[in-house]
Length: 237
Image 1: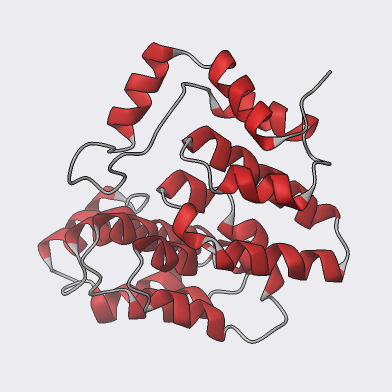
Image 2: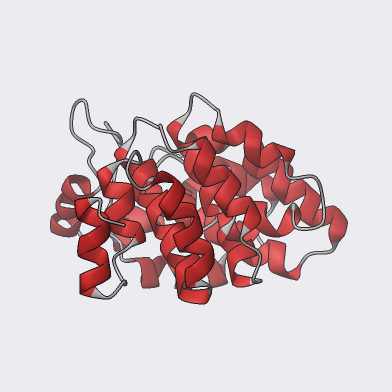
């Protein structure tokens, strides 16, 4: 029988995990002292395995999802978020509002870039699509790194719908952010805009490329023709 209580699910995750893979994940996700994910715990499961488990556990009660989301085990938090994403897609308006509120009330546990990236565009982005976007701007000025990453990654939903203004506005707010993980996320979203509308991306870049963080610029222009990319890097636009 598939366990339905969160502590039992966590024990199953531990049993399915691989110790050597866990060590690799702890290095990759920067869990060492002073790093952005200091102390995060991995059991060593691959993302496809966790996605399969999310299908098995998609009907567990909210209380168990919350327990998983607040677990010290990284894979348990990822499992919880994947279940929430699935549930959001299938839920009605009331259920979607509950999931959105639960998500924003627990962002301190959505505390690594992969957790943000797998969930923000599928929950926060869609929920705010036809509502005020003010929560995104509040997240963008939060002291919590993960809130700020959520703010920009949630806009991926709008980019895929052909809407770029919100991303560009949030990107401008984050130009002076001190965190490399934000520089990468903003650059990535600018690059995604450029895939769909090069002019929209370059209009933004021409105003900011000389002062934006170098990592952000490199991510943003990664797919540009090499000659153009070099001109941006040399400041010759």
